[in-house]
Image 1: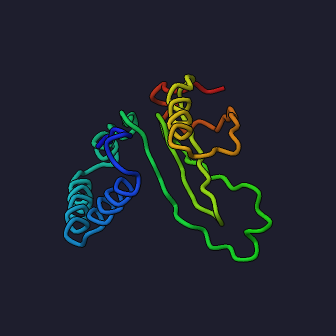
Image 2: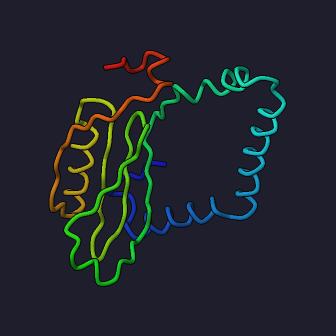
Image 3: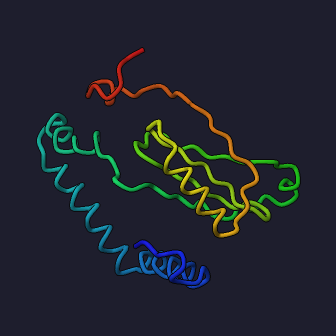
Length: 162
């Protein structure tokens, strides 16, 4: 759910998001999610061949999120080592679209934003939003990375072999 930045206090926004995350972790909800996984597993077990199982799951190979993936690992507790760490990064493999990895260390947050498309519109808007909220960003760098393409993507023609 989108929140107009002027329409609510940041503390209220944080409280609301934490409540939503907590609600998702509720035992009843987790049991419902587990039922879905077990149902999928049971259905796969009912298929007679590996090829049929692959065909059934083929939609995962081209699944593309129309929003983004946000992962908050949490607060790292590294004790005395924290004084020696200047920056820390994470990497999400295989994500098509936009992915944001967040972790907290000492007195800061570290964000790694990865995308599989060339425009910087989303990142530029995000940095502008942080600035408008008075949140200081100490350092940003753009790195183009290339990773080995997996065989499924090659088979589907999403990526061609080098």
